Picture 1 (cartoon, rainbow over the protein chains, first blue to last red):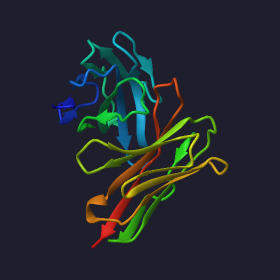
Picture 2 (picture 1 turned 90 degrees about the vertical axis):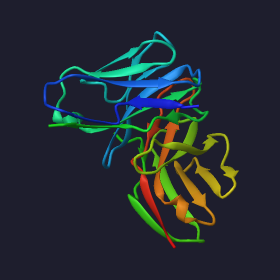
Picture 3 (picture 1 turned 135 degrees about the vertical axis):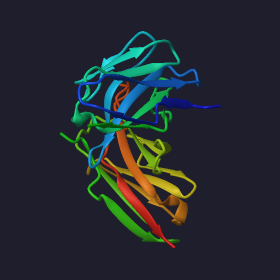
Picture 4 (picture 1 turned 135 degrees about the horizontal axis):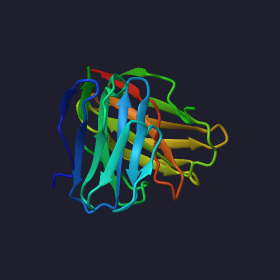
Length: 113
Length: 112
């Protein structure tokens, strides 16, 4: 049982390049989330999807887009990467009531130069 | 505006002693609080949670205390073990809202 799988694990981008971070969960969870972790800032919510077909902005959505492709997959796209988007990105999923534990992927370390 | 704050970036505790991690919040409307643990190069993992209608929840060596009047929660680990060395995040949410708000984290180091 893989849980939450993120790809890639590491990525270096040049300013202005685009890329998509992939996330898939095999727990039949309804809700999925994208967070970024920066030193001294904790985990900040970028976007979330409460159910298949719905997405909503979190705390720091600027510069990102998301797609809830199906129940399993939730992707995060950077259309034109900026150095300020250098961060570690985490995908998470829950049944839909987050007071039950959220399962996180291992993270994607992204560097924009 | 940081609604959930962990004012101690780091904490060192002797093995076998009690570790106390603190968290303050500003929004009295939060319904539920959670603690997550994170090892390097891994995603956070859920540790323990507490509803706002309770003031204590215990799970083995881990106990979370909630003081609503002070808008403060704490995580107690007794006894502390080397494997507890990690970064600990507290988080809070409103029921019916899927947004989990995290604190900035506290790095706990257990000294053998």
